[in-house]
Amino acid sequence: MSESPPVLELRSLEKHFKTSSGLLNTAVNRITGGTPDYVRAVDGVSMKLEKNQVQGVIGESGCGKTTLLRTLIGIYQPSGGEMYFHGRPVSEFDKADWKDFRRQVQLVFQDPFNSLDPKFTVRRTLAEPLEIHGIEYDEARIAEMLEAVGLTPPEKYLTRFPSQLSGGEKQRVSIARGLITEPDVILADEPASMLDVSTQAEILNLLNRLTDEFGVSMLYISHDLSTVSYICDMINVMYLGRVVEQAPTKELIVDPKHPYTEALIKSIPVPDPHYVRDRPDVDGEPGDPINMPTGCRFKNRCPQRMDVCDEKPRDIELGGDVNRTVACHLYNEQLLEGAQ
Ligand code: SF4
Image 1: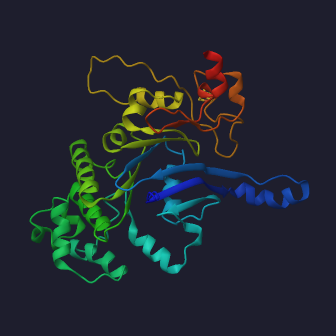
Image 2: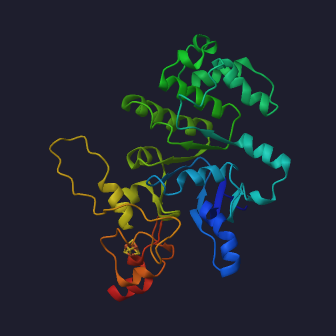
Image 3: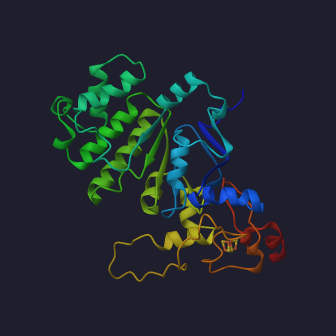
């Protein structure tokens, strides 16, 4: 019997934007033979999200994670590569496939304060996705979802408007709205980042429990490695449009292979005033996504830079019992062989 394909798979997915100066330059480029400027926001990302798996995408602001998310939900058309849903290429989807995809892949937004319609009661907020996807209105199902996200008793919440809910309660309603159509995938865009610390923990625990309970896969996007490592089975570290390291959470945190991952781990806050932290070894800002450095994109900030880093590192599978890859010349086979 053949194994089922990943729920969601990306193969070298790209999303490039032509800049306004690029547009302006188009006429000039036609004459001079030059090439227009592009922001390579997502530039060859590959990953597999398996059934019931929770994967994180972590990186600094501007690394491309939000563009990746918008490409995944179809707001942006990919510039290259392919995305597969249950093994089928999304580029071949017809109208009915897209309708089904939009039911099966739900988004939980970062900002619970603006993601709910202020004119809708909780009941109407949860009824709306049912209506959009042609599912019969079911008050019992709505009440069940409210109970599942911890808004009990449900009757207390059904007639409330967003202005009558706390930030944490709003995010619970958003999660219930995301789950009510019984999706296969939740795309979570930093859903805890705008909440206070104790509510953040509650929302993370809730997502953890619900992904198990509902058998749903989740891609969790964040700049905060501590929350990603708390909730995710597997982490993708993104830098300037590319995934530079991909590994199961424990392996990545205990034994990071890419110098950028190492720096991110050193930046995780430690709640101990006596703890003396190693300074993160990287200074400066990420490079310009229009004028990418040649070779490794991290080389201008990397404390372990070598001459060979002027050449682009390829994804190297590290082997062993766990599935992990790193794009760094430190793990280049020739170097490893040379070191033996
Ligand atoms: Fe650093 Fe070179 Fe690895 Fe890039 S390829 S992260 S510059 S060691």
